[in-house]
Image (spheres, rainbow, N blue to C red):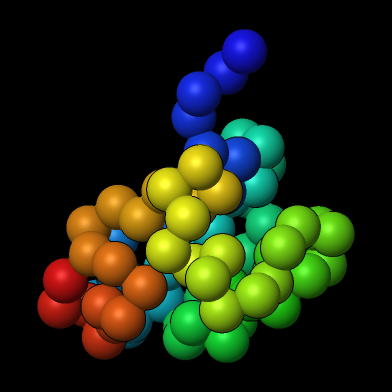
Length: 72
């Protein structure tokens, strides 16, 4: 069984956007935590508040769920 999280949120770019992948596929750029939740919802993944802190669901790279604006 693969132990990697199905969702990966990459570090913020200079404009604050963070590339999001789900199961290795690029699904979009998020500019806020709400954007990440929208992408999760579109992929039928959990979108409860606690989902953002679940390391089995989301791997946050270069900063956590509250790090945006290109400054992790």
